[in-house]
Image (cartoon, rainbow, N blue to C red):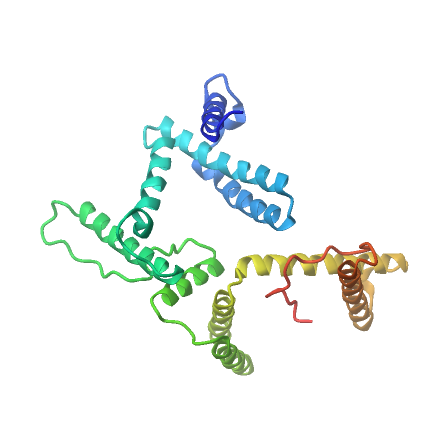
Length: 304
């Protein structure tokens, strides 16, 4: 059986062939910019496969994500910017450098100390890079460093908030317990209500942002990924809504034409049907007749 390294070399060769003059027209047309959506798409498909519990699907989707790394690296190699070997070497050296408690003489008693060391090493690396980039300049202005450096502004807002609060927590700036965050949520909700009552749209936007930020902070504190939790909530809402539409059609009606009260009744019926199916699975007394249950319901409330 071929090793992982041998299969990796085969994959690199395949992608190089696809980009060659007599290769695939579609592959040859791609650029870093055109491939950007696939990076995001493949990452989410990996998460979906992981949640499904289907190992074959999980392995397949991770392969698709790996292909994106190989694809981008091949484009860069063609332009003599960097190679796949550079990519692998960079992450190899980084992992060794940032784990001195394993590969060096530093000691870490627990994962908290590991993460604190990680952030300190990252900060030191940034300083070294800044110094290197300014080499030769006379008295260059020193850019202030922050423990929050390294969080990209290009990230989706929820992921950016998660990383900011995570870095702050690693520096010791965190809540003592979840009760404090719940109190903060109540405070922010009151401020949103006040802004809406004042019909101040700019203030309402600001306060809603504070409320969402507090929710992200709560998710981090209780070790739930808010992006995944929201994705599951979105899926649950979509699934239940489609069940309501089917139920309406079975009564020779369209969902959008129903009175509000009937829509609410259908929602409750779909929810109760889900619960019965989940309870039946747990007790082993029946098979699912409807909606697939969530792997985790933490953070996945639809406000109902």
